[in-house]
Image 1 (cartoon, rainbow, N blue to C red):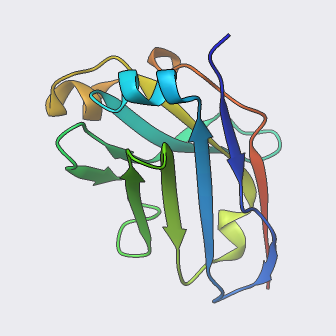
Image 2: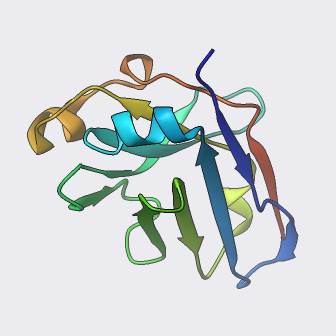
Length: 130
């Protein structure tokens, strides 16, 4: 069964930085590297929300909450998706997940709903203290 594994979460003070990583199996990543991948987060009692997405072209899109502070990138050779997070705020506290979608066009990637993505792992916890 195809699945992604997230890592890199930690407890940091406000203003700190973290880099999250997401690794998939070689077969999975070589297939999905040509489509849409994203980072999502879910805080207790809240719905899972999109944070950043990257299309197969390398073009990126960010939710307003992370724009200017977060950077999504991927390394197809290392089969790894990254999320660099700077200037972290207590509101960024959540469990972060990566996932992949079959949207092969950028506009479809940006418009896709969270439920359209798959390969969900266990996530990695990010806690930002004030």
